[in-house]
Length: 235
Image (cartoon, rainbow, N blue to C red; front, top):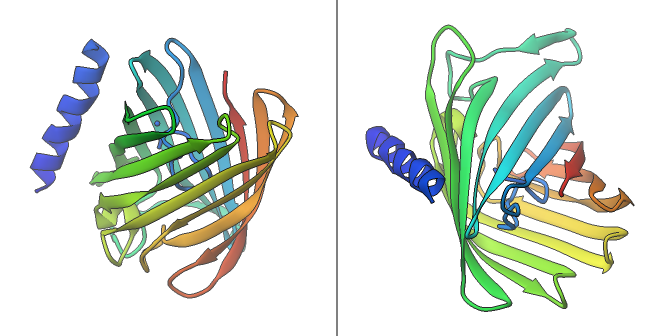
C-alpha cells in the first residue's frame, strides 16, 4: 500500500510539472489554486503546551494545478524549552517533516469544483519514515467568491496523523462578511488522531494580499484546547 501511494504521488506531481497542504483555512484546504507562475506562502503556529509550526509554499503551474513544499511539525515544548523530535513512534505524528504537496482543481461550473490533492515526504531525523496525506474536496464559491465552502474526505497514514483512524471527513468555511477586510473562518477534521480537531476564528486583511488569521482549536480526542495564529501571502 505504501509503495502504491508513493507511486501515485510521483505520477501526480511530475505529470503536473509536465503540464495546494496547499494553503489552508486553518487545517483544511479550501481547494483554491495559486495562479500560474505565482508563489503563495503560509506560516502557522498552533499554540498549546507545545507550539507547532507549519510552513507552506505553493507555486501555480496553470490549468488549475499547483505544487509546493511544506515543513511540518517543528514542535517546541514550552515547559522544557526545547524542540521535540520524533522518529520512533507513530502514536504522535513524526516530527519534523519535509513534504511536497500538489493539488488539481477540476471545475464543474462557475460555482463548484472538485479538488484532488495531498502531501508526501519524510521526517528529518536519523530514522526516516514515509508519511502522506491525501484528500478530495467538493468546493463551492458563492456570491462572487465572498463565501467559500469545502467538504470532502481524507486518507493518510499514522506517521502523518498519529495514533487513531487514518481516514475521515474534512469540512471548511471561509466567509467574507466584509470581503478582504474581515473573514470568519472554520474547519474540522474528523477522527481521534492528533490532527482531528475543530478550528474557528477570524481572518483580518491588514494588507490586501496578507491576511492574518487568529483562531481557537479543540481536539476531537480529549477536548484539549489551544490557539492558532496564521499569516498568509496570496499574490
